[in-house]
Amino acid sequence: MEKKDKELIENAVLASTRAYAPYSKFKVGAALRLSDGQIILGCNVENASYGLTNCAERTAVFSAVAMGRTDFDKLAIYVDSDDFISPCGACRQVLVEFSSKLKVMLINRQKKVHETTAAELLPMGFTKENLNQH
Image (tube, rainbow, N blue to C red; front, side, top):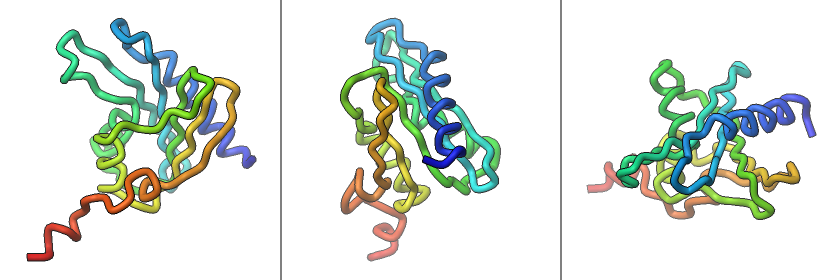
């Protein structure tokens, strides 16, 4: 594994420690690497009104966009679980919005990695190209 991917995984694990998950206790961390190597962190932020909760993946993406950046290279998602946990549907849709080719690493508590892409996570996803077909 490349050094820069190990760094991305370490940052995803760090981000998970910052999660605000008092209800589910399910802490998720995301680390989004940009084309220049900068890493943007995201964690899940829960709310007593569950619908207002934001996932780690979207927190990282929205933070990058707020910085004026959409040049995503790779996303690492860490969950303290024996299983590989995949992003929810809303997060999958947001990832595909920016790049269906975005590389995604799912990481479990043993630091094992399952690599995929945004398109593989959301086959036949709805994109801006679908809006121009009228």
